[in-house]
Length: 196
Image (cartoon, rainbow, N blue to C red; front, side, top):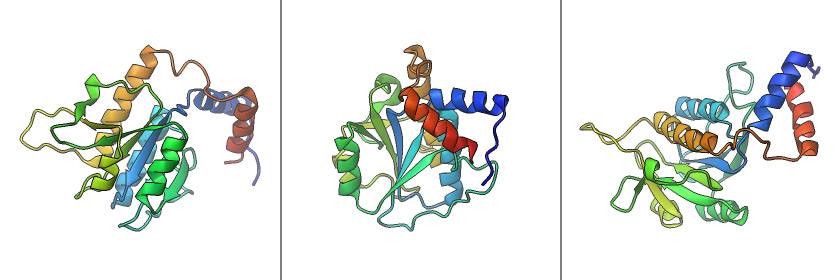
């Protein structure tokens, strides 16, 4: 594949990569609709999330196109797990706290919780939600306050609301202003992205 390098493109890639939040991860647990998954990837890219973890032990892994120029999948890495315990253990071994989006009496509002720690946000299946196994392994349960009769949002919308609150908190701390990777790693990523 031919590299596409112009000063403008390299500047844009450098700016985007420098703002990536390697201390923030999104975990999708058995999200059924590939359109929801694609929308989540686009929001992750927009909010500076470098990697999405797919945990699929009930549904099949979603088929997402890499070819569309509008697809965010080529800009956001993917990690796959087919067992909840292995997924959670892996994330915790890398120092992530697990925050699952679950509506119950023990959940905390996203506006009352610090989203600037090293965290992985788990979003569950459109019908079943986050599994009890993952919820019980979580460090925190979080929810989005709602004022209507219906107490749920489309999963891709919920993802956007949570990530933009995380972005707001992180912007206030200046976390988007400094790269979270070494200069050597940043240069490797720039080379890689120029080939995409």
